[in-house]
Image 1 (tube, helix red, strand yellow):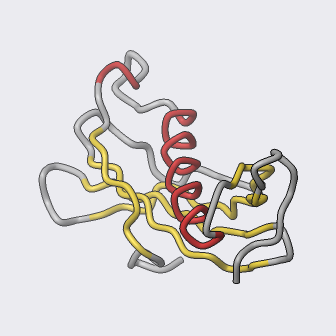
Image 2 (cartoon, rainbow, N blue to C red):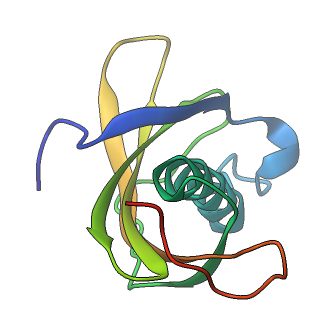
Length: 125
């Protein structure tokens, strides 16, 4: 496991109390949502148009995200197919107002490019 994020910083957001359980741990679904948004931004820019999430590979949480952490999500395209793209997405937590980052999780998100008609369309390469 790398001790430095891989890819481009795509989203930075603050983990808030409304997104946590009573113990102060941020819900995994919130983290997943931020990762999906970041992957969508990356895939849209790379495809040159509309994309939708169709799948993601295995995802395991390595560290919890706590209230007050800054969640930093990094992305990069790892595969471009005819109508699809795979985007590697990593989430890192910046804790205690320091520059120290902890890797939270990572996954490959799969996106499909869609045309005006809502059907798969070739990715602009």
